[in-house]
Length: 316
Image (cartoon, rainbow, N blue to C red):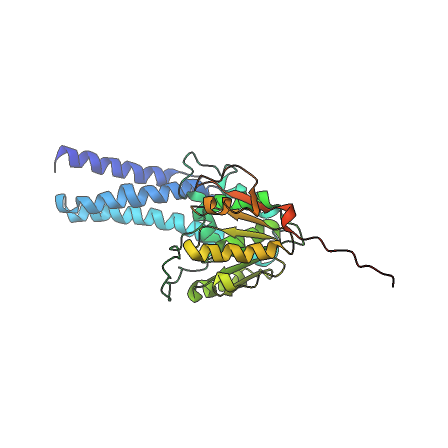
């Protein structure tokens, strides 16, 4: 065995032992540490062992791999027990408005603004493990040309959305192109507001409905339909993570414009659709020029867009 290979194996043993000796890593509140350790095991230990197999004795490497997999299982089992207990708390209604975010902070910390604003982080791992009951299904219908491939909204963006929207009891929230249902479920848990997801893929819609049902969330619903023909009666706050573009987006905006003639509405956007929304004369952006695809933008229908009701003349 070469000196270089010996050094690598020694480093791998050291990393595994460090994880094993960490007395705090299996405490419930150390979720971030466990996530980092699992990532280390997957990509710095197991992947390296697999790459080394042609150059060392199988027995030695297999023993190291088994130790790494055992350490990973122990960490994942801690998370499984934690998520099971927390889901039971959600089902029992123990997280009223405001307390759900405190719970997230308890396990993931309170800083949800990573140095790199692009992509996902351990907060997404926590939220996915908590709210999704099994692996997501495959799509069953072919996307139309202008539809965008499903991509999950980063959890930190949903937390920002819920905080900035400040949903009141009378608000009705719609997520247009809701995918697996994360946004309506999480917004409901954070605010207590009635939320609805509109999704054209039946497998995604069924999955989201099941997730909400297993959490006993009565005020979360999902509608399986094309967004442009959805029923948005009473909707006051809308969210779009660029579900489509082109003519489909223009049709959706016409639908929302008609809703704004009945009442003031707000639209939150994320992704490449924001500049398109910003060009709508009937909307004004609350927080900037809406040029960055990785910033959550808030739009409000202009006051002059909602018609006033003429007084009734005559006497009763």
